[in-house]
Length: 124
Image (tube, rainbow, N blue to C red; front, side):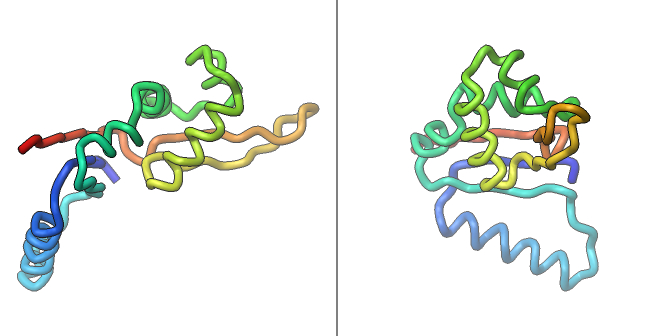
């Protein structure tokens, strides 16, 4: 995937985009390699995508990092980083994988699902 769009929109906007996608599919046109996540309320979008979570996403967009690396780079508590990774993973913005860390057990590596994430909030 090349791009993720996170936006505020209502149900009518969602169905409009879905109809457009269905029309393109019927015509055999190619799809963009992107995913759109929609929030009805801009406040909810910014609550979920807080400054600390956006910084975490920026860290893993260029290269995958372990939870330990993220903890150190972001100067945050390990459990908070782990919790945020879980939420972002549930939303489909990051993926993680468990890897052997020779002599130290298992480590979790986190990576963005796309090199570009676009956030759009429309008020009114």
